[in-house]
Image (cartoon, rainbow, N blue to C red; front, side, top):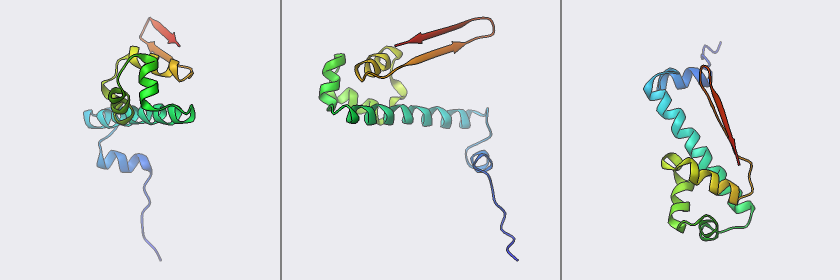
Amino acid sequence: MNNLKTYTLDEVQDKLIGEKGTPERDKFEYELQMDLIGKAIRQTRQERHLTQEELGKLIGVQKAQISRLESNASNVTIDTLMKVFTALKAKVKLQVELANFSVEVEG
């Protein structure tokens, strides 16, 4: 009989990265989200048949900044993200919720 134990993805992440709420896990989750944003920018740009240079011209930045953004979006400003996704004709929604206050920005 096979006595191999199976693990859920959450169990593996808890063991290898840290449990949810720990600094290590928070850093991992943040970096993953920023990577996904970069990939979304690249994929959408390519679907719109734009080069990095053309997208850069649309929002007033150099090709190198678009390249960095697609590779690692972790140091990008909200303003730049809004400009990029607006130029790509994508819907953007930023929502901040606090205990007694909420604000939403759409572009």
